[in-house]
Length: 208
Image 1 (spheres, rainbow, N blue to C red):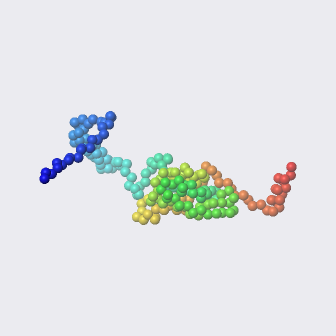
Image 2: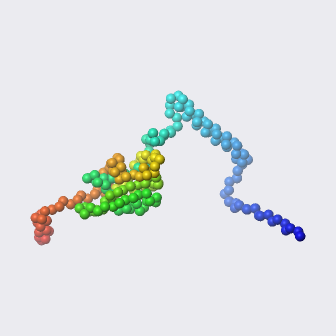
Image 3: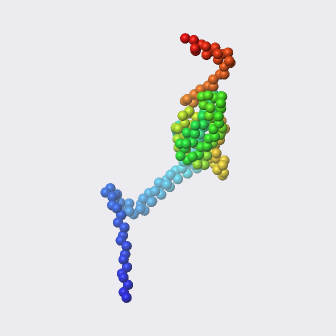
């Protein structure tokens, strides 16, 4: 009984694009480009090494965390801070908009209730950010309706061997570079009136 002949699978025909680049023999050789890249790397290395040997600083290398860069961009998204009201309390009203818009879900807010504050009775009892998962996108700053959270250009100290130490607490966000120049000033609490003063104001309003 004769065995059937083996059928070889058809070779996959890759799609040919109309703008596909054609490599020259020089580019197909690869070795000239490899030696060119090695020459550039060696030149940069020797130039910076000569600067170090002669007492000058070579490449702009920051030895983090011992050193920190001084040329951060003005809009660099770095460490978070919470702005303050005139009395020193956080400007935050615990609306959870920043925690809702956060794509990494790293913001945790525990709201409290202050019956003596008729403007915004909610306030944050706990406000924490998990820097081990934060992506520094800045959406929390854009979503805040009270200008309560900002991001400084400086980077936080993220060096730690324990991820639980990378939680940024509300106390640190209030005391590290405190700021109170909010774009939306918090309304002051009303002064409680005495019974006589309240009756007098009521009569004045009712008088035509």
